[in-house]
Image 1: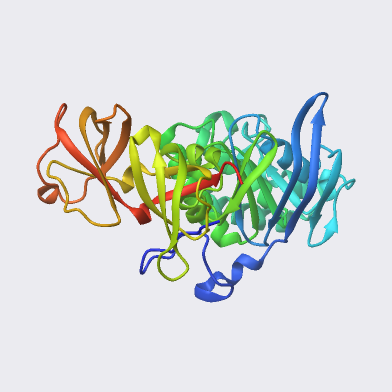
Image 2 (image 1 turned 60 degrees about the vertical axis):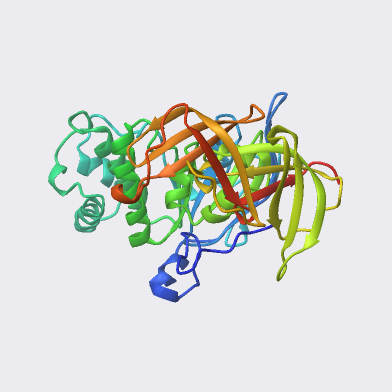
Length: 400
């Protein structure tokens, strides 16, 4: 599978070297191995031979639509469900059959699960009181973790006096106070409004950086997973479709589903006309794309055979839109069309461009410097859309 090279000077999240730049703290927690895990509920196959390796100290996300099996997998790791087959190991030790409270993990739930009659302090202290920890240690540790989640001023409040974001901070502090090796987070932000969710996500990432243990985060929100994860497992219908860094998942999707689920894209069935050596380890592939009405060029690191059916994708933000025809270049794909729908959304404009053969292409134009944006493109304008062969991507070979 082709993995795009990084842009010069940019190292995306999820790409680091152990011990470099203070990353040594990421080695806290423990490694988590999921090996051939399957689980069915009656005739419904929730998980089908899932295999994932999570390194200690990682912020790892399980990403997919509702019903894909991500929460079932998290519950198996936590010990709330037992798999039909397979192994879950912490630092190489199989934990299947071990009670949830005896595992090195703790869980943060979507619905907070706070005790309504207890204060913030007592909610956080509860796990320590169960363990019969002495009072001085409880006071010290509770205040330490409340400071970590920025709730120092709310110690004596009851849950009904807190906002949704504050309640989730209490739940996080309570889950962390026993110092687990693995923190499991089951869609912890989904009950919050968009702006609060965004703010708390940044805080959660900062908490992970300070604590340094292994985080396993379940979400259906692609932007959440891309923004905080070191690695992501994309799941659908009980299967793990791709595991990679956010950069790899977005720029080098392994399947049509991953390409469509992660962000917006233009996706087409295509046929390989020619695959020729290009430069370094690249091939220049000529594709016949019926929906575009002609052939296009795309670079790839995997050699394909003439006549193979493949899926081709190009992200809307990779496409340039202009009123003037761009200078023709050997590796530039250029089409003419008409703007059917311009949508202004502040930081960018979205254009739906109907090409001469009738196909509609989505194009996103980022707004950078107001005075350098060039002539305004409006509804019904005739425009040219273009993208480099390096910006398209062969997602998967349909037939071998």
